[in-house]
Length: 450
Image (spheres, rainbow, N blue to C red):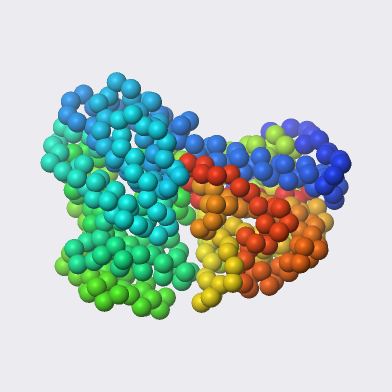
């Protein structure tokens, strides 16, 4: 854990009185606490905006040869636009694939929009287009790969013998089974003609420079977007074991493919030395949130940027820490804010009754465990603006969340059991809706203790 305490100014957000200004605690009202939490979320998103961070990570401009730009992810289009702005005098060409609704105008780099989190025909078309863009390059050419969260679904080029439908089946099963992102990507790489270093292999002997926005716990380059430009240490045997562990009944063609131990992904040492540059990460966002918290009169504590586990259970654990801060001033004294990042999982029941994502499910678990404790508010949201499969970034909660929900006819435990966390927070007007943020450094969470 990293304690961020130095330089905290005196004072905090002014009290907000009037309609909705509930639960004043130690100078904080409900309105002030919620405003502070929303400001922290917006700070995290701004810290990962490619338009402000990409230019500082570019390599030397090419002096000869071609400059080919390829990429995939929810931020791919805005990264491409930022590259065009930074290099107006370089002859750029190439293609990037992003999520529907995440495209931005570009002048020289083609943008294809496709489906996420389950790939569609545009995902396959875009991936094949990237592979064609890097054909027949020489050692004088430069490839810039723009990779961000979502690239695994957005770049879907099934290997020979598989169809897009096969990959869609596996993707849906992996999303529902509770596997973490590293496990999901280990399977995806072994079904793909572009992931797991195969894009870099196709681009050889050109120099490949990858600019990445990390949305994965630990910032492992091989996991971000399933590592299309990074050598892969996972194996077919590992992929087979994961499907068995999670009880996934794969299509026959997938099972046959996963027996092809003779066609492994490029392994460490088999590709030219990678030039892989992180331009935004979860920890960068959390540090920006901590700095903002100090200006609001809060003592921040970063619990970690790579927390994983079942979302509701993590909510219960975080409630215990928050209650300790409130009651005992441990591990730090209030007014304080507990910050964390990472990617939890939600294991779906066979027939979920509602809709929900990692962040709202986390908040439901937190609310139940807090039981309406005074002086504690929280926010959880995905920095890409999408919690699960809905156009919802996350939500806010306060000491009165359970009471207001009950008055609206919503019971927290029933909503949790029915995987209807989105419906729960929608009923009390506490959803965070941003629209596409065009970046993605995974989930961020903040618990404010007054």
